[in-house]
Image: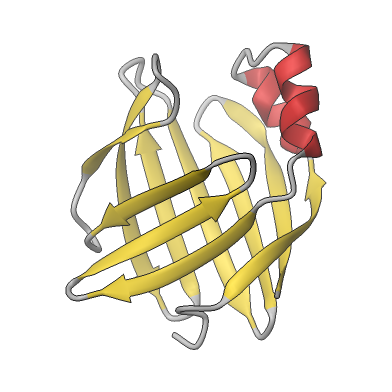
Length: 133
């Protein structure tokens, strides 16, 4: 888990706009989201983990591996999220009230992080690429 405590800076997107559009995000919000260059950091805190994302604001997700919790994605949108670890892969599954699920598989490889985003209701794969700061 050499990636713990490292800061990763956003490099590029692949199909991220398409998955956002699939979920009904308005075009102006997609455009704004595509302009953000977030940083990510995953840290261990006792028996929990903290995933910090910094872009126009700071968002911290505190979780325990394998334990489902409520994640507020927006004021109106809440998911039941669960994180699991397998070597250098951290998988997050978000379950929504309408039955859809989103899976974010974060693969850490040296100084690179690739986040693959898939959805139960969408056939594509979106990727977000990061490099260690």
